[in-house]
Image 1 (cartoon, helix red, strand yellow):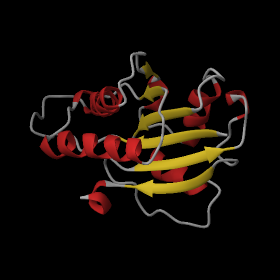
Image 2 (tube, rainbow, N blue to C red):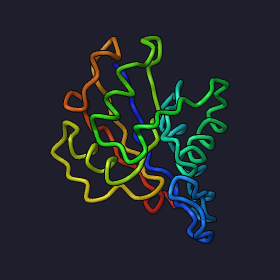
Image 3 (cartoon, helix red, strand yellow):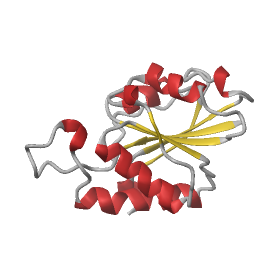
Image 4 (tube, one colour):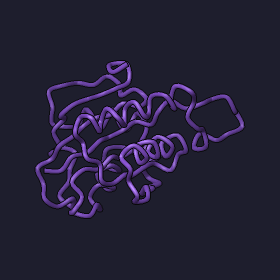
Length: 164
């Protein structure tokens, strides 16, 4: 059984309008919410072993918070196609994971994260995955090359306002 945390980046800053969309950092709320969610995932018993992220600064910064809280020494894997990626892009990223890894956190953006959440095997509809939201999926596979969104079961959906 493999577990996946599909994480929408934490809230980003719009203060510096000269920055490109990819360059926007986390704002104060994002810096507050990201560690709350990482700690909640850890308390939940999710043993993240690998982090994959969009190259956008806000996604990478959120991933870095999870990396620190999980005390992971492995580098964050950057996948350019996750920047505004759709469910097939998440599949592509996960199909290449080493089979010794049982739990992956993958960081991206809306609307892709919300689209993906609603493609998981579930009767639950998620209107919007908010910033710092975590969609927890579980899939009964031994090899990541067999990963598909359609075979993944939605186990839980966590977001900052439900915790704080």
